[in-house]
Length: 592
Image 1: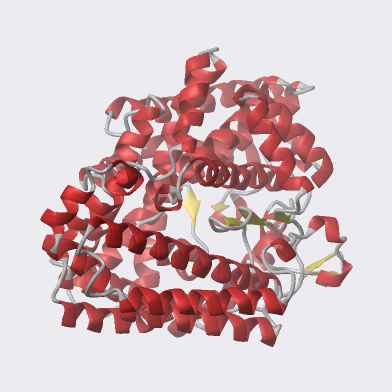
Image 2: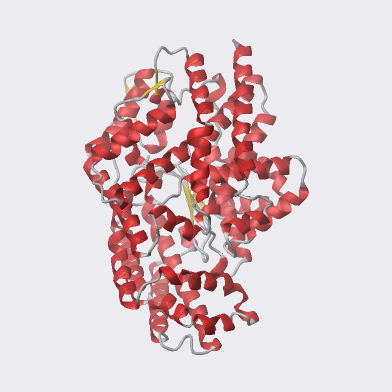
């Protein structure tokens, strides 16, 4: 499908950012002037509180406009990657941003140098919104280098991100999948549909046609993945952190033990539950041999559930009704104001994400294919966008961006409310079994799969920190080994399993994946209380969403009445999976 063939109402409206080149250029010129103003104030902005306050306001304006420029280019390029004019704008913005990082890297140094004086400024009421952010900068003192060395690091920022940029820029034309003599289009959006096909030859063909492209370019992907691991390891060492993980959790403002707690729960204590689930799949599918490309086969007949975009929004509004009318109004705005780019087409970026800035709508890129997974993904991304919308609407810019650590909570609460709604309102026993199955699959992805990814990423970072070579052989063999431990003895791995790690973008996000597990455990706790009729929980949860990044992630979650350091929420989450699995077993055996 070509983009021009899609009705405009199903594409996001980027003209709300920039209606024409002239408006883009005007903002670019303005942000250029702001950068010069900030540079000129280098030696004077901490002299008195008036100078400091004016500087902070100018810095906010600079950052807001730069993020707006980037958001436009990023979104536009993801749906029109072959538009060279857009690519040129993106290159222009990135070059400017990278240069700005170098030229403005003095800011944190100057703040730290004048920390005693600035702490006095912060007692003034007008600095109230800046207190948390400025104190975080001052706290970083032990990891900050000299001005000369900071400038050197800033100059390398552009180079250090090349691995991610190369990964993001690669697009494949996959060999089509042949079904009944007809060749069908294969990409990341349609892969799952083929893997659900009842014909094993179709599943195997789709899996091979997809991941053989990654094997063809394995040395390229090994280089980009090794590059990002090495970058994280070098920066951690330069910044005087004990490890790349230590640097990551420091920036998240959470204890390192939390990472290992999640991995211990998912990869050791409760992994046998996942193996039980795979054994049940093998039994229900009546297969002598269960391969990993067989694991997406629908276990319930009604799994061909279809839902068009317009119908999806009605379901979403009903499912999210417990969150209140104000929340639902934002959902309606997302559709009416065209925040969302729905359908897949040739060359469009795969997957889905919520992306925007303080001065734009919280846009969503989707690859909607009219199935339940698309519905679930849509409500997930709407969770992110509503979180951003409420944060931007209730916080000043300095506190509007929430850390990645809490980013998955809102999206997972939405998904959990959806599946509970679908299970409770299933029209037939088979449909109910299907939705229970979908929730089991969702739990597998968030409670089990992401910690396995986390272990893989942790081990790669360790190798990079120890200066061990990361060849494609090393990377793919490690991934295949961890995958076999993850799936269990009942599952036979395809020969391309090791190379499938190259498809996953989250390995470029510096210990992102385990946060999905945290999001799920927290979401289950919040949803349980909401559905139990705890009206105070709804109010506290919405207050959490409105709080943006105004305090540490742990303190933010405590606003929502959830303590992420409490072992109990993890035990409850895996017990929820165990109970759901038992319910599914009983339902499926009764049907036989």
